[in-house]
Image (tube, rainbow, N blue to C red; front, side, top):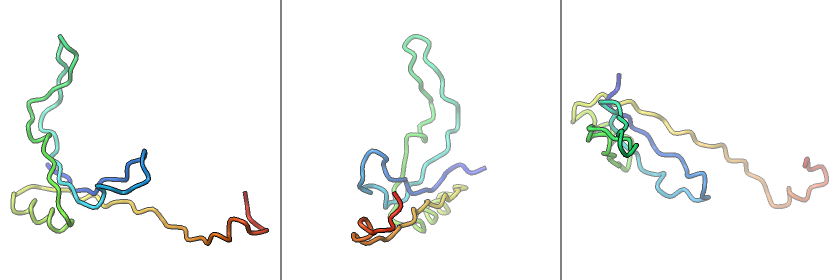
Length: 98
């Protein structure tokens, strides 16, 4: 089982831009389960590594760091949406399907 995962975050669904989706992130797997505080109802954990997210420019840099640190990292490839190229005139075509 991998103790870290390397991925590129998806685009935010609430915005049309693709800011902060270019970098690769190395994130550690949780080592212990989160517990519920009985008084306040907050969820907490003593696992400090779950708060760490390392950002890299390329996937190769992230994999190289994981190998140097001795981490068993799982690489998750991003899903790239298909681009459908259409011209502006296609919107007004006679045989357009609505």
